[in-house]
Length: 501
Ligand code: AHR
Image 1 (cartoon, rainbow, N blue to C red):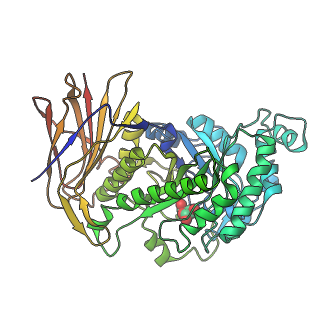
Image 2: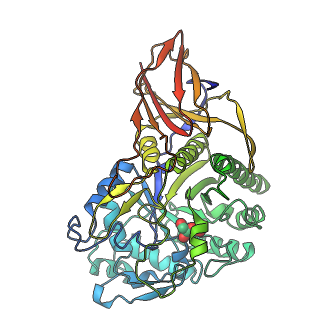
C-alpha cells in the first residue's frame, strides 16, 4: 500500500468547466456511420435510419459536440455527393480508408442526427483536395437562410431551416504525409488564412479551428504551429491538437503515464500561440481544440494494412478496450479538465465502432466499452469550476516518461449546488494507494459516493455477451476525521469521489 495526499481548495480555481470538453467525433470510417449511428432497417432505427439505441447511449455518454465527417476521410470528400435524392448520390472511392463511400449519409443526415442526439455539430472542411470556393459553398448550403442557389438547394432537399453550424475545422492533419493534399506549413498557413477570411466575410461570428500538428512527435511539430499561426492568427479562434496512445511492446507502465505527453503537448502549443500573439502585438488569445484524442491500438491497424478490395463500411479500427485503457482515458480526461483554461474543445475520437466508447452489431445490440464510463461520469459530474489539486504522491519509473506520480487528480466545485467531485487515477500496476484528502476548506462536506472502475483482471472487457462486465462500482465505507477523508484507490483504477455539504 502506498500513501498519497491532496488538498481540496475552492480558491484554487483554474477556470469554469467548459462544456465543449465533452465532444466526440464521427468520421466516415469503417462502421462509425454505416451500421454505427445510421442503419436503415435496424429494429431500433427511426424513420430516417438513425439508430435510437445508439442515440440513447450517446445521450448517456454526455457528448456535447460532434466533429464530422473526418478525419482523413474529409481531405478527399466532396460534400455535394452526400446531399439530394438518394438515388442520385454517387458511390466513390474513399482513399483514406480504402473503402467505398455510398454517400447515403451526408451533411443533412448528420445535422438531423445531431439534433436528435442533442449535440452541436462541428464541421470539418476539405482543405486537402479542395479550397476556398468549396468551403464557401458548404457554408452557404448549411447556414444561409435562403434566396441563393445553395441555400435554396438545401430547402429543396428537405431542410428549409439553416443548420446554423458555428464551429468549423479548416481541414484535417494537413501536416501528415498520409493526408490527401498534404501540405507544407507555408502552403497550409496561407490556405487556412484565405479560407478563414472568406468565411468571415459571410459570418464573422464563426468559430474557426486551424490545424495544428497531428501529434507531438511530428518532425514539423512547433515549426508547423508557428508558421500556420503567423499566417492565420487574426482569422482563427482555435488551433487543433491530436493525440492517440497505446502500449508499446507491452509497456503498460509507460502507457499508464500517457497523460504526461498530453499535458506537455498542451502547454507547448499554448506557449507557441501566445508567442505568436505577442509578436503580432495582438490582444486576442488563441485557445486549443483537442479535437482527436483517445487510446488507439494503431499498430494493429498498421500491421493489418488497409482493406484490399474496397469494401463498404468494413469493420475497421474496432479496438476493444480493457481496464488499463479506461484508466488511461480517465487520466486524459483529468488532463483536459486541468487545462480548461486553454483547452476549449476536446473530441474523444471516435464515437461508435471505430476506436470508440460505443460498439454496435449490424442488426444487433449496442453496448458500452470500458472507456465509456470515465467519459460519461466526467461529462455528467464535472460542473462549475475546475480546481487544481496539489497531489503529493510517490513516483514510479517508466521507460517513456521517467519518474511519474502514481496518482493524478483534478476536482470540480459547483458554486450553485456546493457539490465537489474529485476525479483520480492510480497508475500503479502493483499497489493500491491510501489517499488522504484534506477537506478543511469544505468543513461541512462528506463523501457520499466513491465509484471505482477497476478489476483483478486488467484485460477484462465488455462484450455483446457480457456488456456490463466492467462498470464503475460503489466503494462502501470512507473514513472521515478532522477535515480529512481517507480513500483507498485500488491499483490501476479510475475513481470518482463525490462530496456534498
Ligand atoms: O481517428 C482516426 C484518424 O486519426 C483520423 O481520421 C485522422 O484525423 C487521425 O490520424
